[in-house]
Image 1 (tube, one colour):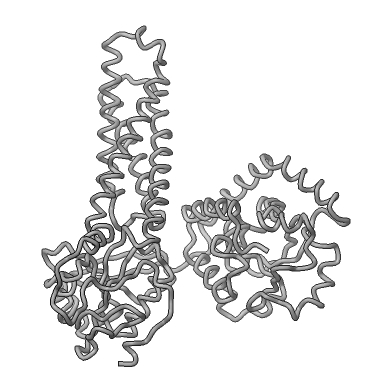
Image 2 (spheres, rainbow, N blue to C red; image 1 turned 120 degrees about the horizontal axis):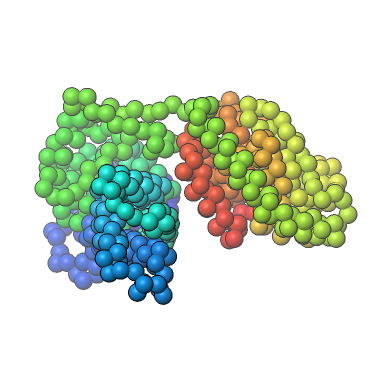
Length: 513
C-alpha cells in the first residue's frame, strides 16, 4: 500500500480528481461536472474540428479570391467576357472543393495531432502540395486553359494562410489546456511503478493533452476513497476499468508498461471497451525517441515496433548543411546594419575589442574559435578564478545571475541573445549549425561522462532545445538530456520549429544571464 500511495511530487498540469468517489454510488451529475466533461472530454474534439473546418474553408476561399482578383483586377472585371469569368469561377470552385477534401483525407484535423508536434503542419503542407499537383495534371490532361499566375498565386497564399491559421488556433488551444480545458480524460492502467512513471512523463509534457482522472491497479484492496498513485486517485481494479471509464466520462485508457496478464489482458480490455468510442493507448518503455523514428508493422497479428537508429551522416545532414549556409548568409547580409550599430555601441560602452573569441569544441571533438560580441570586461577570463566559489551553474558549467564581469551594454546583449550574432559567421564557414547542442568549452568536455560525449556527434548550434527550454535556468542533467534528445531525433522540420520558438524566446527572454 505504501508504494501505491507513493507521490512523485510533480506538478500535474491539467490533472484532476475523478467526478465520483470510487467507493460510492454514482451521484446526480451537477452542471459544473457536465461543463467539465464538455470542455475536457470527447465532446470538445468535434467542436474544435468544426472550428478548423470553417477556418480552413474561409482561408482557402480568401486565397482563391485573391488570386482571382490579382488575375483580373477590380476595375477590369467588366472588360472580360461573362464566359471567361464563369470558367474561372468554376475553376476556383474546383480548387476550393479539392483542397478542402484533401485536408480532410490527409487527417489534418485528427485529434491525435491537435497542438502536438509538427505533424499537423506537415499534413497541411503535404495535402496542399498534392492538391495542386493533382489539379495541374488534371488541367493538362483535359486541356483546361488557365492563367498560370492565377493558379500559382493561390497555392502559396493558401498554404501560408492555412499554416498561420493552424498556428493561431494551436496557441489558443494550448492556453485553454493550461487551465484544464480541451483535454482527453484518461484512466491509466497498470502496476503502481509503471503508472507512476507514465504520470511523471505526462506531468513533464503538458502538451500531451491528457487529463488523468484516475488510475486502475491490480490489487482490489488499494481501491479506497483516499488511495492514490502520484496524487491521482485509484478508481478501480484492472478488471473493472471499463466500468470506471463509463462512470468518470473518460475517453482514453492508457496501459502503462506490461500489465499483469500481458497481451491477454490488453486484448480482453479492448473487447470490454468496444462500442464506447474510447481510445486504447499503450505506453511503451521507449523514452527519448521521437515519433519519426518509430514505425509500426503488424506481422500476422504480431505488432512490431521498428525504431530507426540515429544516423550522423548522409543526405539529411547534407541538406542541413545547405540550409545552414543559405540562412546564415542571408542573415549576415540582412543584419549587417544591426551588427555595425552593436559594434559601435560596444566601443563606446567600454574599452576592449568588439569581438570575443573563445575556444569551443565542435563536431567529433574538433576545436574552433567561436565568435561573440564582447559582453564582459577585457580580462574576464583571468577574473573567473576568483568567482569560482560563487558558481550558480550546474555540472561543469559556470553561471552567475549577477556576474560582475558583465558590462552595462553586455547585460542587454545577453538578455536578447544579441551577443551571439557573430556566430552566424561560424555557421557560414561550417564550424556550427543554426540548431544543435550547446557549444561546450574544452574543460567541460574533459569532465563529460561517456554517454554525454554523444553531444559531439553533430555540430553545436546557435540555438537548440536548451535555448527554448530555460537556458541558464536548466540544471546540468536537464541540459544534457535535451542535447542528447536533439542529437538522436533532429529533423529539418523540427529545426524550423525550434528557430521559430527561438524568436519568441528572444522577444520574451527567460534564463538569459
